[in-house]
Image 1: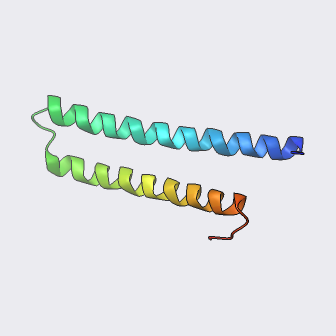
Image 2 (image 1 turned 90 degrees about the horizontal axis):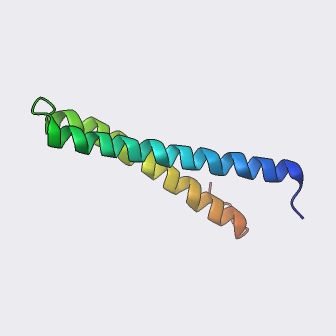
Image 3 (image 1 turned 180 degrees about the vertical axis):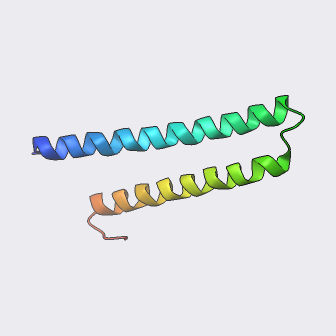
Length: 77
């Protein structure tokens, strides 16, 4: 049985994950829109922002992999 504290922790973790993924999505949409609409916004401007989005996605992937491992009884830290 999941305790109330564990349920709260799980909810907070899931909300943080959704917030992070929403922030990444917003960043990618913003970069795409700027590249399509603004002649002053060049590919050179987009590259650092895209790299940041890729790093955030990689970090989130690692968290998900660790969570799957934890649920299966493995320690993948």
